[in-house]
Length: 363
Image (tube, rainbow, N blue to C red; front, side, top):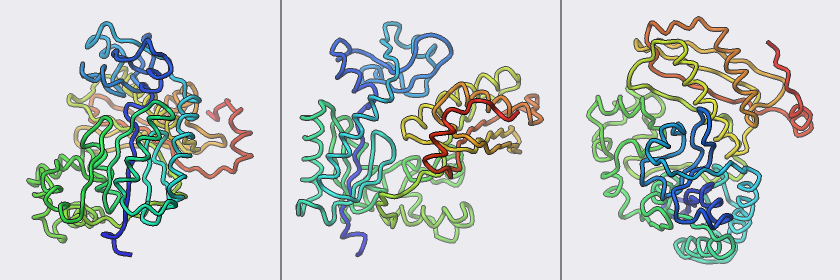
């Protein structure tokens, strides 16, 4: 099957956590709402579109969010409820295709090339799914439709919220040419900066680069970037795709030079990592921290445990502090980036269930 004959849909729920809270609590509807806690040094887990108008977004420190919107409303996270709603959404997906690859509780890829209802038009399926989610759950979703995963995911962001956008093969190269390079798969802050230094700011700029130059500067990823600029992505929708790791990194505009500031930022990162891991129902036994100095030298430390991480902030924070204490941290050198990762899922179900009760750390 050629990639042009595939029919891929990317469904992305709109402000999922916040929308669930607004649905379940009508008094929140139409008001600036965030999921999180108003006390302490926490971070925002999710923000309603009303809150986003004030510049509030997920991972923003609570203190800053309140500065932007003093009358901001807070709803405590209810991850069991979000998982329940997510399961209902996946049942709707299953009515159309068994080829569903969840990315988290609130988004998934669907391959509807050969769907269970014999519908030839992927746009029609996307419209039906959106309508069923709205009528049964009272929530809105945005959908992107294209012939590969790369373009379907980008398309789902075009008309958010409650949007639908289709990118055909005929339109793909011209469409990609207008994209900022940050919208491409695998292009994070560091890679984007490097691309900007090479004069690559849009898909059109990327298209002008040779395969040899891209692989020279970006290694194996360069081959993928070369394909993306031409609308080529061979990644299949895999319903059995295991998530191998989950991580959060923070790059600072001003280098950190005080140890307490580094620890405080790691606490923020740990809170965001727990939010993401709960969002995707991720558990892993390996935890790693990373610190990069302003001269781009990097130090890291990791440890593999006999119990899973990813469902308990207190435990993850203890682990993070323990790993920090095992490295020779020198903030005077200027800390440019920090990162925290959970990885290595290799426990069977019985081991996971038993390990969930383990709280003592081997330090």
